[in-house]
Image 1 (cartoon, rainbow, N blue to C red):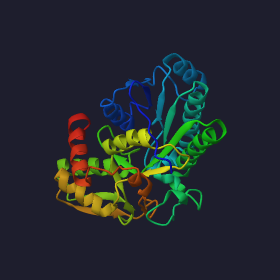
Image 2: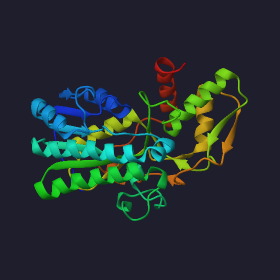
Image 3: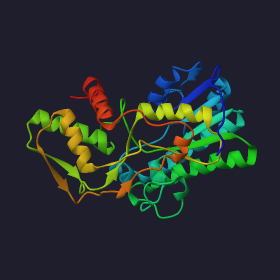
Length: 315
């Protein structure tokens, strides 16, 4: 793997998807770099329309692009809206990546997801596990789209020599997360459930599944820092995992969230709901070799996320 040296100084950096949790964190992190940050509001540029993407990129001329725009959600959202998760994500990534080539973008970072890996991949999951087994059925639509984005970046690198790279984050959380119980991921959903249970004085709160699956969680501000590090120090067709280095069971996570929120009741597990992948912990050896490690512990990250929720979302 190549240790690159790429400077962001003086560059025009477009964060595609700046309005989301990841995009917002990227904008905040890039604010510490000597670069010009470009954003394209959804109302102004529909990323699913190639002509709109081409017009905007030809006008704004970004030097660097980070593809953080995507249709995202938890198990229920993935499983109930397969067409949107597959089609919209394919359109967004194809339009942005193809236009980055067409307009001569110097460097592009595509953000994938740890769900690209097989459901039963050996743990911790090495990048070489990609395409070695069946996907988790509940999020296969999103995973297939993300795999296509990875392969598209590799194809442009191979055929045209483009410096397009891909990073695979683990489960993310933090300020700006989605706290809608119909479409959220597990950690923000637990925050909402614990907060409402505390407010209502409930003795128990219900959790999906058995509580036994193990998950790794990365604070979104750490991901943003890793992305900047990869832009500066990574240039290869090899994908790079971005994780925290440890995992917890969903039951353990619920206990941790409850303690931070102040919910003192118990938990009921609903075995009729899907568990998803039994375990998902990333091997981050490649990223560690490039000189980066996560800085935020899970307890501190959850506390900061709950504080943001109370200030911005809670009712």
